[in-house]
Image (cartoon, rainbow, N blue to C red; front, side):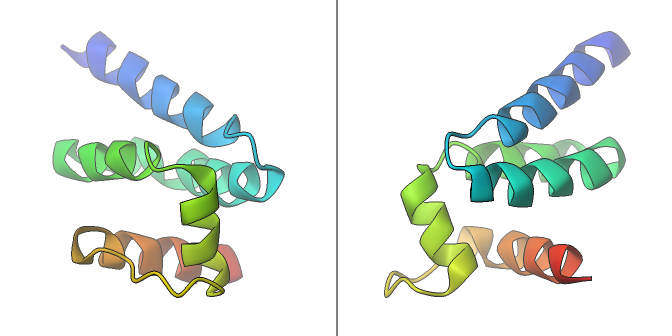
Length: 87
């Protein structure tokens, strides 16, 4: 089971670093690299769901330029990412 979770974590880190939009690679890739190893199953699933969202939509969330509201499911995670990348 542990090998399966390690592979899942590596997959998430890879996907976070290879998004298509360089800005999102940097934001999500750095966050994943620094946090995925410490995430529990629920947090990993939430992050995995987040990285399934198309880059243009995510970029609006992270740049605060969009008029689109962040779904409540992702608000805490997006805020955590923003806090950690600003440091």
